[in-house]
Length: 397
Ligand code: PFF
Image (cartoon, rainbow, N blue to C red; front, side, top):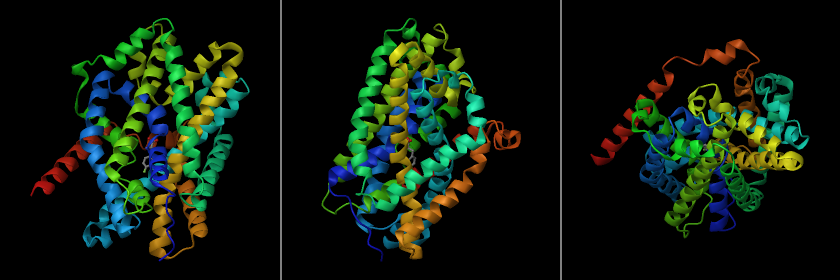
């Protein structure tokens, strides 16, 4: 079997796994899911799912990886549950599909770093034009995938640990400063109320399903990322306390990201929070609302804006690295490829799979609408809940 490498210490694992969990899901996706899900009621359900359901799942994933020292599919075989390796294969597929679109959004964040650093705040007024400039955003996506491939090729202890060590504290400090600033702005209190005072009428099947999906996505679960990272962990390391720390760090950063963005939305919209629940406002929140605020900072705006999107890009990078690591370790272990060759092959294939996502944000009318089926989110939620109930029943029996 290929040499699997390992983390240099338990702290290295914690940093890399927390780096995987903390990413666009916390700062970009969480606020817009909260917006679409009606605010505080969604937040309550999200917290419930993270601590009651996802934390034990995280411990289990890491334990499977640590015990078997295998990739996501090999791990189930090694445990003697060959039939169940379908779960590993589904995880592998999910991770590949997630990385294919995640890389596109990460490319936008990376592109915004250059735009903000040059003081080009107008990009936010024309966000649709930015995402449909296909060659420019395509290039950013290629560069981002190349960085990801570079770090994965170096192996888990060869860079990603160190990156996370500097990044995580800087990101937290930056968001906290922005929270402080946003709370001083007129009407910000309306945003805080939307975020923290629950309206129980907003709870329905799609908000429950949305909170469940967001909890799994944010904690990097169900995709084999933590099975794979766990496989690089020494058998003596305590995984319960590490998982608790990773869960707290991830949920904490998502929570403060919400506390940063909703007061800003309230400020931008004169206290009117109705816009935030509309589909259009959703995915674009941090790409439209935040730059508007950086602009109000005057001379330091370009610096603060550039630095924010640079940190966001790094946060995305520690997540894309973990997403790419899953199929790469599978290809190395199970198909016998060398690590470098596997990295290049998998990165290119995933980039190609992501091309429809690149085209789906304004450039191509077909791809922009083809995969949005009316009611699909309710359907997915129902499937997720049914699957969860089934799993809970099978564990009991
Ligand atoms: N948890 C990451 C985020 O919130 O941005 C996304 C992610 C990374 C999902 C790794 C799944 C995964 F395996």
